[in-house]
Length: 182
Length: 366
Ligand SMILES: Nc1ncnc2c1ncn2[C@@H]1O[C@H](COP(=O)(O)OP(=O)(O)O)[C@@H](O)[C@H]1O
Ligand code: SF4
Ligand SMILES: [Mg+2]
Image 1 (spheres, rainbow over the protein chains, first blue to last red):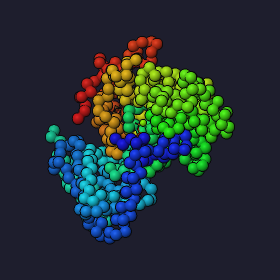
Image 2: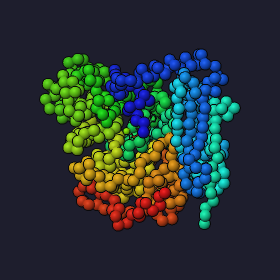
Image 3: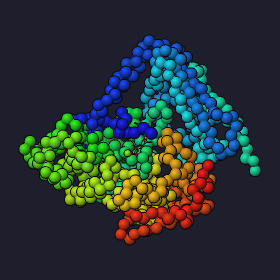
Image 4: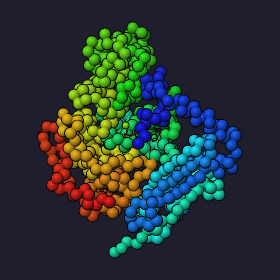
């Protein structure tokens, strides 16, 4: 779990009482480094290379699941280049997953991110891996969920850029939910 | 007008793993001079709530919506300058770790005196005197000679007392205490809590006391809000919460209150852990850990309800509320626990009589 007091998401000020003290170690150099190489990659690497550099893969451990079982899936992104790559995303939500084309399996929008682009940074050769679970539920209203029907469903994930699929920044896989054996 | 009124506060962090909804549509109110407890396990969103009141959350964190009315004015609409003025003058905060607040390169006395000068417009000598007086008030012996000690020359308990002195130096109307005694051992904890309570009464300061320990809330608070996964799941006056908890999570927290005087030996802990707030379970967020969970709990998220009438409560006016489908009538089996008061005098000893009546917690869980 990320901890707010250890994170950079906290205003710090040594001169003001009641705001946490500034942290001595690591934080600043780390941030500096990422700023430098971010702008570097923006400057010298053309868009099409950036998009081609990053690949994304969605997979599940099995292809069929009994009804009501959580379906774990893994999203792997990789930077094939020996230099850092930053992808500019449409909002601070840098990527998202979906089931049958429905974002986070919810028919109601869950987030209303600010209208700000964000740089999604990959170190050279970096592989990012995210583990998620789909609980075989679709959210139908703010406070209601329905079970998914048995049959085949598509789990997809993509970076939050326009036409992600065309740019190779989207992938999907299918799973089958077996009908209840009653 | 309430001293503090938080309405529909939502705070999110945009991370590469996804959006963390650390505080989700939270509303509560604190009256002048009141001691209000916020309790929940680690990761529930307690610190983020308090830091949002101080406007200390920064990117990738973001206060998405809501209002924080302090004496009727929305802190979220204030300019940077205005909020600086509120911070310290009217709202002060004590962190779990005194070292978050104390600067190691200045003496304890200098730091407090600086706050006094800053907020009360005192001269050097006046500020020094006031500081010594404050150090004495918070129970630091030989305050005069300890004025020029550095933080590392203080024990953990003494550091925290110094931080309390600093917080009180400007006579705030609201004191946010984020687990102020978690890092301390039990005897010191009891002393500090008592001190804090006494001082709040003396200075007529309202307290928002954040803790993961219901026992601590019992000692100090008038009203309590129990948080789980970024949301309030129960609100009640402290007595009601102890004698008649309405939410299964509260019951779980009660059975994990340490026996008095023993921090290590927990009676029983709630199985499982708080979910990752990037990805909450569908329905009631507590269902994977709830011994009473039924199918409905995986499909419906209970709002905060009046447990007597089952009507939905909104805003900050309700005294008693719990977010469980028991009160919408949607549970088939219903809740089944009893609270056994082991000693009349010690509220903190109330525990859930889990043995006889609670169902086997393994049963409904996958
Ligand atoms: N800098 C951060 N980035 C992402 N998530 C964070 C950050 N800081 C805190 N969180 C998340 O916010 C949630 C609430 O955290 P917090 O308020 O610290 O909980 P508590 O004080 O109740 O232990 C947690 O799930 C935590 O992982
Ligand atoms: S709604 Fe269901 S899962 Fe949630 S607390 Fe009530 S019984 Fe437990
Ligand atoms: Mg905390």
